[in-house]
Length: 130
Image 1 (tube, rainbow, N blue to C red):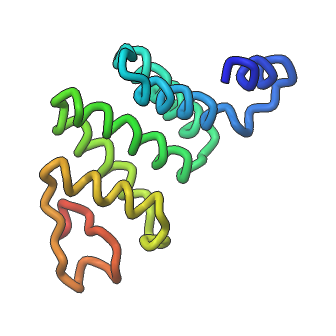
Image 2: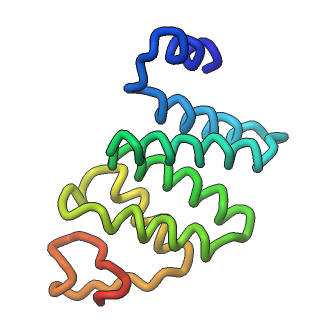
């Protein structure tokens, strides 16, 4: 991962920068003795880069990883807000694995997700709307 990031810096190729930061956070979470603050820093950096690039899918994938970390640290309210905000940016694609994973994690944070047909065809509703 360090080599990939070094090449990003060296050549100025930023297309995968957010994904590199996200993967660093994910890898840290998978090690048993990881510092959660270090993983959180990588996720936050990935969110910032994806936001600047307008990369909604990468933003959602990163938000899902960060929300999982926060949920495990007992920060369910933060995780719920982050996922709700990220999912609100989507109006289609609700059968894709990334959106389904984020929706499932949102439900595990204790968020109420209505199943009313008026809330959208197969998509998790905006929590304020249903």
